Length: 120
Image (spheres, helix red, strand yellow):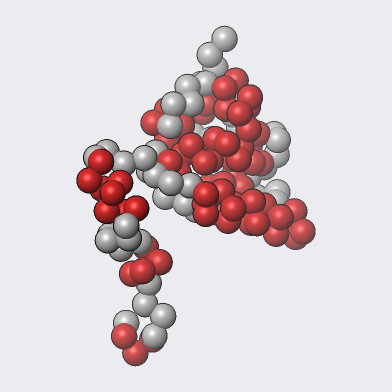
C-alpha cells in the first residue's frame, strides 16, 4: 500500500514533495524509516535545515499537533536536530562542487554570517 505522505496530519504537499526528492515515496515508508533518518535524507537532497520542520515531522509521525512539543522534550529534539544537521552532507549535482566543498573552497552559510553589528 502506498499512502500519500500528505495524508499524515501536519505534512502537506510541500513536505511530500521534499520527501519525494529524497526518495521517500509513501507514508508507510516515512513511518518505517522514522523522523531522524527521513530528515537526514531531506537534508542530503537539498532541504535547508530548519528546526521547526524537523519537529513538525517528529510530531506528525507521533500523531500529535505540530506545536505540541514543549520544554524538556523540545530541548531534546533540538539536540537531535543539531546532530542530524551536523552529520548531513548534501549530495552534489557535480563532482566539482563536491570537491570544492571537501577542501573548503565554497562558503557555507555559517561563513557568510555577519556577527559584528557594525558590518551589517
